[in-house]
Amino acid sequence: MAVPGSAAEARFPCHNCGANLTFAPGTEVIRCGHCGAENRIPDDAAPIEEMDFRGVVATLGRGEAVEEKRTVKCESCAAEFTFDPHVHAGACPYCGGAIVGAVATHTLLKPRGLVPFQIAGEEARQRLKGWLGSLWFAPSGLKTHAREAGGLSGIYVPYWTFDAETQSTYFGERGTAHHVPRTVMARVQGRMVRQTRMVVEMRWRPVRGSVARFFDDVLVLASRTLPDHVVERLGTWRLDALVPYREEYLSGFRSETYQVDPQDGFACAKDIMDRVIRADVARDIGGDAQRIHQVDTRFGNIRFKHILLPLWTAAYRYKGKAYRFVVNGQTGEVQGERPYSAWKIAFAVLLGLIAAAVVAYLYAETQGATPL
Image (cartoon, rainbow, N blue to C red; front, side, top):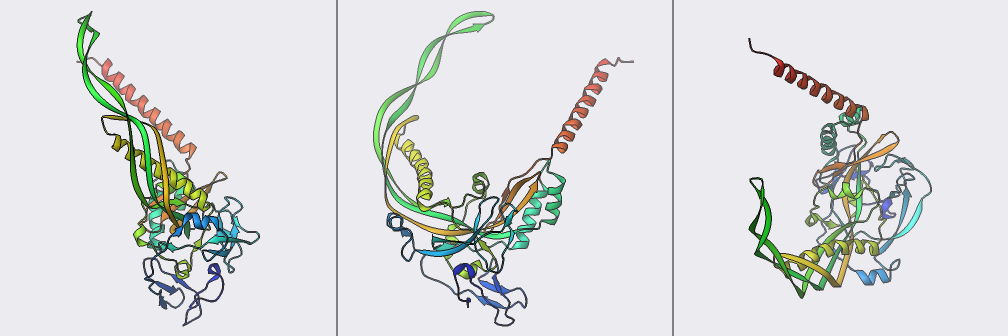
């Protein structure tokens, strides 16, 4: 049973020894790290409800969909986390900077669901160790970091999912390829001669039409802390593993509050949808080539939800800059930023030049040798 308080301050004391129970990744239990006692997380068969986008945005800050969260902020990278009253200062899991300063209170939309951690901390450390150890031209300090593979933090990262029914009308051109003879000049045996060759000519005609598509669970990152290229390479999240939000899954982990509001989140989702719709339009135009001049899309029945997804994070500082590494807490995929050691690259280039010089010398000696 949780100790009364806000969601960010919930504690689950062990019934045997009073220590705090924390969620055990890959299970459905919260476990005592002191005596090993376990409490099973109650099953919640209720569906994860999505909210009407326009209705919620119009009343944002009021109603049952929101809650007040106390947060602390990293002064280096601006990441914001739910406040833990038992941890007054510490290192930011994203950049390694200090999390200190005043506690702020925000009115935020409640998470509707989350994907629990499936990868435990030790497995995440081993995966990160292997990834870091495989990097070429990495600084020696990073290799040491790979051997130790310490400093991993488990964190739930905020996302939005959006559903929408779309109707799109378009105007464009369909291209049909035709093979036609063309006379060209070509050099044959040193002389310029006329030749007839078949070339492809595209004939265009205007087309109009419409396409429809329903989008389900378009995923948008609601944090600005991690670089987009790192997050995009983390692989596909299995959203069928979503469970209704319960505080037990967060016990022992941090959770980041969202920095991208629902309106900006939907703008990102529209960009994703638009790319899919343009591909639909190209298929609908048909032919051998397509030109799309205009697409007008109406978005209806827009629904969304706030969810949390699990990441193991670590940071390495090199020459004053923070490099971030992440392990997908569901699949174990590892991605991150990496520094390069200038002297290792220079040494490799020098070795390459020496090797090239040796090969050139041996080749010259071979070519200059005379048979006995």
